Image (cartoon, rainbow, N blue to C red; front, top):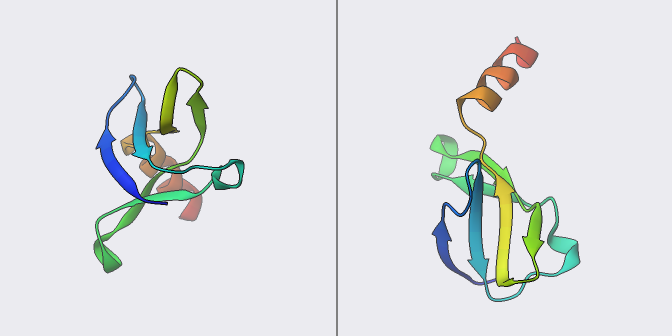
Amino acid sequence: MTSRKFACAVVGALALSVALVSGGAAGGPWFIGTGSAGSQNSINSFGYNDVPNTMFGPYWGSVIQNAYDSASA
């Protein structure tokens, strides 16, 4: 998979424009940062027929971080 651009596409979602995305890519993680400073920020979730070569995923902001912190405490 070769990425081309990263953009906020719809409210509450992120979009990643990619050259090739197959059905097996669903659920794959999206990371921001590198090494121990990095974190998972979304997953491959859905696409639209009229937006070719673009995978969308939910934005994991502070609400998800708070839920994770509570669950892991």
